[in-house]
Image 1: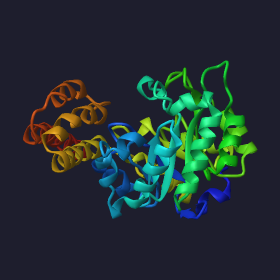
Image 2: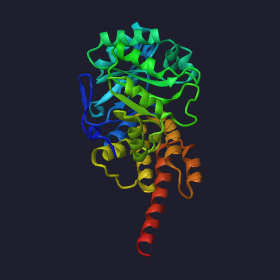
Image 3: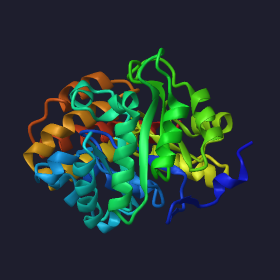
Length: 338
């Protein structure tokens, strides 16, 4: 049985959210087109931009990632990474100017090109720098500062509770914890028991992340951890319905009607069109990976996926998806008459 408090608003410092389900920042995914689709099904949930390198933002190289924020994105947070407090503070001020409701600091990304620069999960091994970053950013902006991290560097260095307490003391007003170590990457199962330990130790809200692929999984995670909410990540790839499904379940106790294959194909077609509209030909090339996520789990999916991941134009992708939809509509009509 879910706790009644999960049906109430969530307070993050001065910010009040009417959803306890978050859409994770996903590199190369969480752009304006993707957020527009997630927002349709989750009007109250906090969304995030793609992770932004603070130095890149300060030097304008990554300014477009945050300038794409629109009023329809709200509530939205901008996630930053770097190991230099001064760059982080300046980038945070710029992010707030572009509409960020909170500033999230990434201390969990396991990717080598991030950790080698002293950012992401490498900060788990440098808690003093991590604390200085949070303290400096919190002093620089008028919005809440939050942290996203992992349970530790590897199985010999699981320091989630101590690290989380340090971040809270430095001024973090919410912590999202992915229940894996940096060494795990995305392998194995998320260790939700560590999320429960961190939740028991902190006074600020704790958001559970890792293996949240359905409303049922979210409910199990919340029951086991006592967390204040959940963050969806890989489960939304090719499935922007997930955040809204979980939010609806937490608020009503009821699951939404299942998403059909036809629903997914229509969503894929819209995603393709949005990427073209916002990014032109570059969006078509980026759409190929999205199409590979949407098109699976039905007869003929492999062949269709193979074609969609090689498209060169909007018209080509639309034609392939329209033909697939016509096939499914015809199959549905035949089923309805038998």
